[in-house]
Image (cartoon, helix red, strand yellow):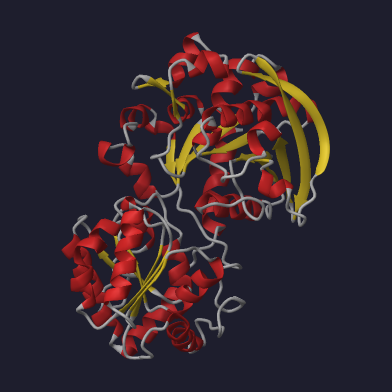
Length: 475
């Protein structure tokens, strides 16, 4: 069975967030099964084109119609492990500075990209059985497939699976976008139209054969207005094809047993190196050198839906406890400045690192005792999975993938994974932090729980089986 993943980013070539991790790990894990021939298609961005570490081979060029003009498409390829990668080249759309997203014509860029992917099949003689689409940037593919290509026999058997990684970003465009850019009108414009605009994600929900999202709880949540950002009626109409599958992480990359970024390696059978990592982290960040105080860490985008409002409300009350706090990330200036001020207010006890550095993130995961993730909404979340992999006890709000992956810890039986709170309430979060800190001070229970946490299977092995069942049901 031929599976093609279509996405706007994918490590190790292109990554700006969690989607990049998924598009590296899921196809790689899937390719281990000889039943599947796995490929990935990505835009040929400037950062990749100018990277000497990667030299894709040119296959073919042709033209595709977008915005009522014939537009160049180049197709390049390379092999990485057992996965074939294709890159769609157009320097007008993708040879740009300023990041992968946030350009004035993103709608046109990704509509072009989606149509170019479909057109490339006939040009290079590759027809997948399944196209696995990811988020709004590839959401027009099932619409274009049915509107423009379904009459061609080679295309008629292609099935589509659309994964919603974050429903907040939907690809909303003005009404005239359908005719002027996508060259679609009539019934296909109606498929894309929602709430007075063209909505890419709505089109995929209606036109795709299956819809998945990245945790079981999030699949339930997005059928309700609080979480759906307006799409709940469409999702309820199409819930018969909606499935939630929890993401995994790359357990080879995130492994304290062989992580080159941490000062001392450790494992579930020999976790003593974690305390050396903690001491070295305190030294590196200028924190008080104390083994008897828990380090609470956050590695996050500093934005509202990550629950930073809760931290803002009670940060002084939180710091009245005998804890140290480490924050790594960038985002809204409001929260960046809040943490900078707090660092000034609590020298030696709080460190705000307003940057992102993956090696430093590893050292924080390894050296911390508790990991705080109080999200307002969280489709899946990877940070809590990484934290547990490094023996760091999570503190989370019960939403989305956090609810699925961090069952509440029973401090007597040690069943469960971490400390949780239900309501989006600052003092409920504060109470969870205080309960976690109190538990951490019980050395015998802490040691036993840390070893159990590190054995938690957060790999892609189970999610791959669930995706495989969906693919087989379609073909």
